[in-house]
Length: 304
Ligand SMILES: [Zn+2]
Image (cartoon, rainbow, N blue to C red; front, top):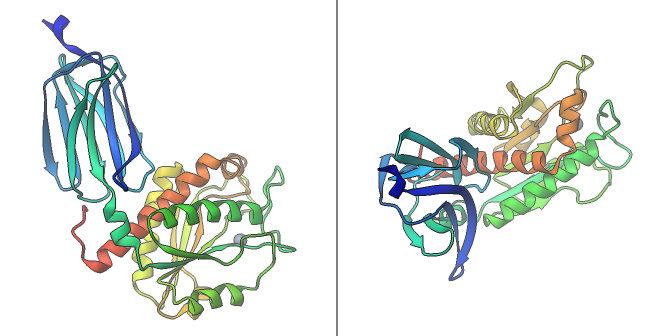
């Protein structure tokens, strides 16, 4: 019986543009068209059940696009393939097929919610250290000031693409006082101030990520927890926890965070800090944490 079934050969997630709008798409490629149904087990989750065979291996991919969180392919029984899509938000979606070779079945999600959430939001990003202040140094001599600037640059691009107004405390290798950094957040009336650093420990076995928050602004704690959960998952690093930081209290009612995505004194994590892929994953983790935070604040209809 199975001989007549289509074979799923590949699946992936991509961004597309049409009519000035951007979409996240989950694309399932197959040898021929297959019958399918779509189930919606809960908010922010969509399952496409296909009557097909899978040549592609069952797997889960964690997606970094700010809207699609992960896509899993499973084979519940022979002749049936399930593609489950978990979204960061409950958005408008549609499905379509494309009669090409390979044949494509596409789930398409509207990304305009990101602009809705981030427009009119001001975020100050602070790459820690700079100039004569090198910050910490890894065992293979990577400097904290370089890593923080790279991560800040990627985070800045992502938040801007989501429609946020962003400011960097520094874009070059210059030194700035802590006061100057905080001043920019106050002057720009930022909703959020994010200072990027690395952890360092005398014991090279110590690793992991931590987030510190401004205890004067009560919502900072939830934001710190949200971001730590996401950067540890996306970056595949252990969480060292969240804690209040008194050096952020001068921000008053601005949600302030000091983020240490990994530990530079650890050999493995110094290696991670050199990887543009890691910078991107951490930046998306932070961006999605902010997305949840702003959405909660506005009581938008959002997936849990
Ligand atoms: Zn530092």
